[in-house]
Amino acid sequence: MTAMYKLGRMPLLLALPALVILVVVFCIPLARLFLISLNAPDFSFGNYATFLSQTANIRVLLQTLEISAIATFACVVLGYPTAYAIVAASKPARMIILALIVVPYLTSFVARTYAWVVILGDTGLINTLLIKAGLVSSPLQLIFNRMAVYLGMVHIMLPMMILPLVSVMMGIDRSLTAAARSMGASPLTAFWRVFFPLSMPGVRSGALLVFVICLGFYITPAALGGLGDAMLSTFIAAQVQSSFNLPRAAAASFVLLAIALILLSILGLDLSGNGNSGNAVRMRRSWRPRFFELHKRQLNEVSTRHRAGRWAAYLYRPDGSETRRKIASATFVTLVTAFLLFPEIVVIVMSFSSGAYLDFPPSGFSLRWYRSFFGDPGWYGAAQTSIRIALIVAVLSTVVGTVAAYGLSRTNPRTRRLLTMLILAPITIPVIVVGVAFYLGLSNLNLIGSQTGVVLAHTPGALGFVVVIVSATLANFDSRLEQAAQSMRAGPMQTFTRVTLPLIRPGIIGGAIFAFLHSFDEVVITSLISGFSVYTLPLKMWENMRNEVDPTVAAVASLLTLLPVLWMIIIYFIYKRWKARGHSELPGVMLNA
Image (cartoon, rainbow, N blue to C red):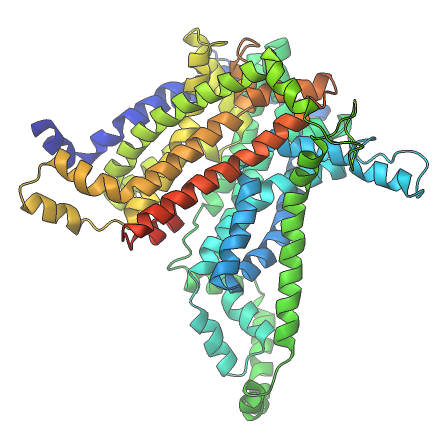
């Protein structure tokens, strides 16, 4: 009891286990990797000079930046109007649309990449339909090109763009837009001058997150792109796995990491949008030259009398454009949702094909490929390995991450922000860099090719998800409930188990689910750490996609697509159960989680 009291007085000690795991598995190896890139102890920039002096490396680096930038731009163009329409929709419609967007977001990205292989391949859905319709006589080259890479990357990253935008837009006071309309502003002017600047934190954070993650993409470009579409992550992975040239891989990794850190330090990640409205408006105006600002002000003064005379009539005039805007918004959201869900639906339908190869529509329906999955020890053995590793990672990261989030919630804001950024580092920098750092750290511990090594490599990223979700839950927690319990002579342990834990349990469950999915779906880091000895299900899928054409992958992808649906059903019943018990604060907690 005394120990718990001391821990309550020193909350940073609660975050110590998470920080120890992070430092041992990630921070120290990352520092050693940097020293290797500098040829320590001689300390020279020879590896960087070699990397930058080769034209092929520069071309791949610029190509990586180009592909990431275009994919990010496409996500912004598609994601912003989608998020705006979601926020403007009614609450039931908003929840349904968000659920349809979250399902692809939680689906294995290997399965989603395979879905595009099935759709764009020579014998895929599009070519099959075109040939049967007589529009083409031979298959079109729809795969192994840059456009296929863009389709796959945008499909995977679009939910990650939409969700932060929805989070920020939900916090914007709509009365500000209504006030602008009441003063004669048109809907477009009210949106552009009021709503858009206030939503810029979501655009900035979402675009930055998407761009940084795209920098480390490895599976999707390798599966959908050609030889001329390789990204820097492919070069780094080849240096580690094939030639084992760690200094060159380290130099390339830190070139990629430097780009990500520069962007993160300049733009930052702020999904709140609170307190930044004035800054957003001022920043937007500061981009305009003062010459244009002066002439615009003069024109506004000239038109003021005209606008003042017509604003009342304009305000109360029947407006049929509102109906048209609603129809256009509903159509656009339907198309975006179909874009996110259609590949998964195609794979599910084709997985029931009875033929020797996949076709759409299937010539016959059977469970042939599902029987192949459950009857092949290689496949279900890989699934058992993935489930076992993911369960261990989920339990470890949930316990350590929950305790860390509880401790961080009781520290001062500056310390909490700094430590949270450190904990989130493994999931906010390019994954290939994280994988190389893990590889270096675990190789020194002789854990390459072991399940223990894979568990340790998955845990830092899972910790980040748990800390974020539980911290969001604790942000809505009323600490006066703990004070009331302690005033009635409840000890720290009893207060935590009887008061705090039941109220934050939805966030803990959400964190555990995301930790499980993070580990279960991981393939880039696993491919470096497994040493061809530990085969998880995503890793076996990736090897199968590269080396042979086995329709069993369609059955596996279908099962992985249905997995997030199962998780959402579980979360829904947990929510209903808690709501039936009268926990009025649960909806807010679940929304933040």
